[in-house]
Amino acid sequence: MKNPLNSAFSKKRLFLALFICLSVSGFLLYSSISKDEYTEAKENSTHQWIDYNNNNRVDYNNPKEFILKKNGGFIKEPITSVLKKINWGKHSFFCLLAAVCFMLCRDLFYIIRIKFLTKNKLTWKASVYVIMLWEFASALTPGVIGGSAVAMFILNRESIPIGKATSIVIITAFMDNLFFLFLVPCVFLFIGGSVLFPESSDLHSFFSWYFWCGFCLIFTVCFLLYLTLFWVPKLATKILLFIFSFPFIRRWKVVAINLGGDIERSAKEFQKESFTFWLKVFAFTFCSWTSRYLVINCIMNAFLILSFNDNVVVLGKQLVLWVLMIASPTPGGSGFAELGFAELLSSFTSSTLLLASFAFIWRMISYFPYLFIGSIVLPYWVKRTSN
Image (cartoon, rainbow, N blue to C red; front, top):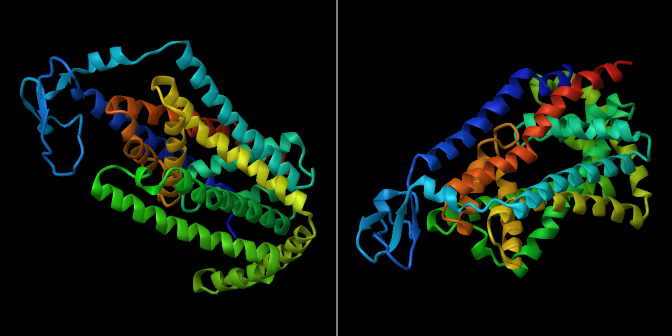
């Protein structure tokens, strides 16, 4: 069987991920800079809004939406005026620094979790390598596949038996999905569904439908993983046999049977763990994902004045954004992430320039570093684990 690591970490995937992300980010920035913006004004207003495209919302960067009319409630502003309004100071610097710190915290809790799940068989150095390469793989593979498909081989190369490595990956996937399922009811209880999706009626329906389809899929996957881990370990073998029953991969059916047996034995070992063990694993997962979400909050707070309720809404909207990225066919959700970000968070500012800038800064902090770090770490890791 072809080594999946060679395919996952290919230069072609790296350049494709960079190209898509930079292209979409560049397009958003260029389109926002090349157009004048219209903002609400109580005094000396020069334009009036008309719903030109009948979407029931103000499109601030669409000139067809505004007609000349004195005291119409809106004023046309060139990009230079918009840039002058951006308040850059110590507060902005510390918020962006906090965003970087939260991203580091996210990785730290991932590192602690993987070391804990391997019962300290991985050293701290090895744990860092595993997580960095895991994130590298996630950045290079479509969101629907993710880095988990490669992570078991990364762990196996770090001397973790393939069956145990697969069980660990299943546990991490289960905990990540469980966090999502835990957070969704909380968000809808405290926020409500009406504010989570774009204001436009068409987009609201699309994002709502997309989100609930994603939620049902994640719930189903989480339930199957739960059964595999805690009740029916043989389910892993049955699923693998079904997958490897297709003609083009049937030749590796024996490998699937052996892998299924290893997963069964590892799952039975994990079933013996105490409730405290699982509580710790979920706590590491909770802290990691919360840190991930707070990155966007910090970026937006660097340039906007947001209340506590606004920050809670931003956190809630990221659940929708996550579902969008998971179902993305592009590497690391490139393109879908930037476009979804700009659409979902447009209710917090009418400036397309700010939204495009926020999306670019977010990806600069949460996505690009893994591409570069992974490229640097990979050769040393391959040499280190060559034996």
